[in-house]
Length: 135
Image (cartoon, rainbow, N blue to C red):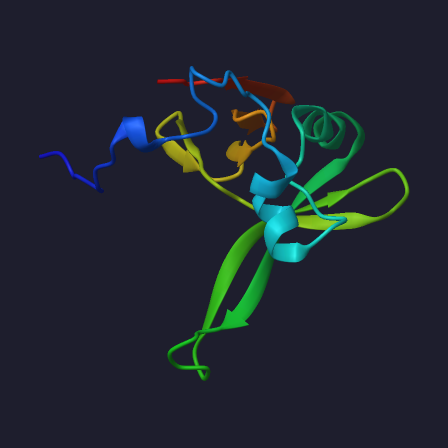
């Protein structure tokens, strides 16, 4: 049985469509910049490639209190990505793949870029792939 998450009218999409031909997010539409202000932005594909090629990725867990009941905690898996300078960022683990019948949360991760493209990062063999899907 298929799950229907919602419907939308493709004709109501007024940007980033076949008519305007835009393939890169405008600064005013960049969610990181809009919500966190100037100085923040959604990474480019080149930014992701640099993180993959030049940085060390290590799985870490973070324990946080539950929102509904702060006496309860939950453990969340994340990536700590450390660059050559020693600076690091924390990224979510976004997915996984089945390999030899075992679900591996750490191998495949999906992230967005500024070029309206999802990228898939496979850490096992240091690959990054992606494709643009347009209506």
